[in-house]
Length: 81
Figure 1 (cartoon, rainbow, N blue to C red):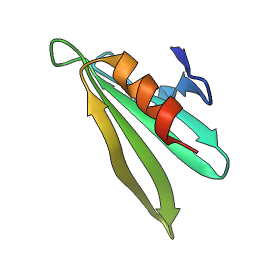
Figure 2 (cartoon, one colour):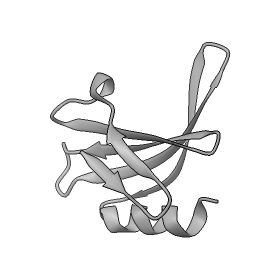
Figure 3 (tube, rainbow, N blue to C red):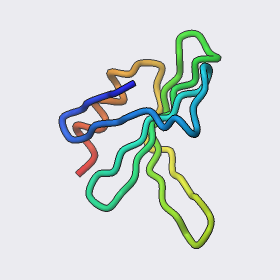
Figure 4 (cartoon, rainbow, N blue to C red):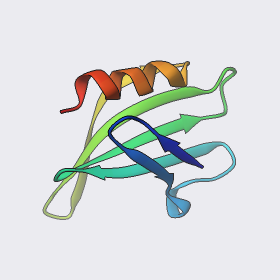
């Protein structure tokens, strides 16, 4: 899947996705972002994460979550600088 916003283009991370959980990743500036799509719920649930590494540890911060993809896209367009 490819998701485009005004500022970013997210693509599916094939290594960390399956038929139930899909992870879309992008880099913007020097930051990495991920959208997690959980299809085990009805309707699907979307979460936007900011991710970074500290040493060997992969850390993330949930920025926004919604059951509507449009709200995630609007959040990115309005709040990510």
